[in-house]
Image (cartoon, rainbow, N blue to C red; front, side):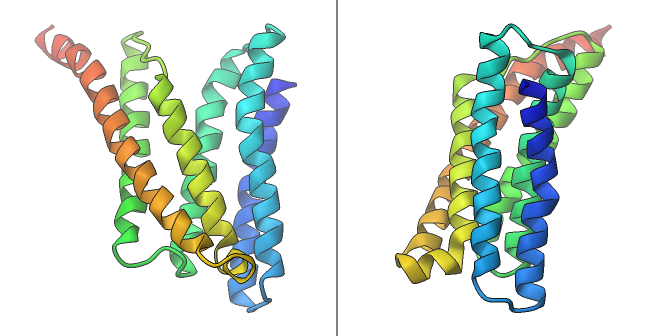
Length: 190
């Protein structure tokens, strides 16, 4: 069951991206934003439940441990690119998106290298909060213009949360790098 939730999150990535793409391409109004938002919210909620169920049901698996962070990064990364493409994220806020994407690539590369050394870098509580803030920010930004019609300030709230997520992303990225750098130095000295 936990792995099915993770697979569902991976499947949600092209669905949300497709909603945003078609909405902009055909100027189809705001309804596709709400469809994309709904899919995204369900996918984001599964991020909590797949880990919870895996632990509660003692169904933790290697594929789940590998695929869960990948699903999160795909969901956030692809949607950030789509939001930049449609102009929801622009100007200085593009830097927040670039910080988030750069950190995710850096940490993934570091984890891959450390895995070759058989060194595990556990996910910190702050890194879990970072993911939560990223998902909430991206959710607000997907709703974006459609949300602003219902309640002004939805896009602005999403952009503020995106910057908060970027700051957390920098901090947790530095934390991971600092934790891994000792192993990198040890490997070079051998």
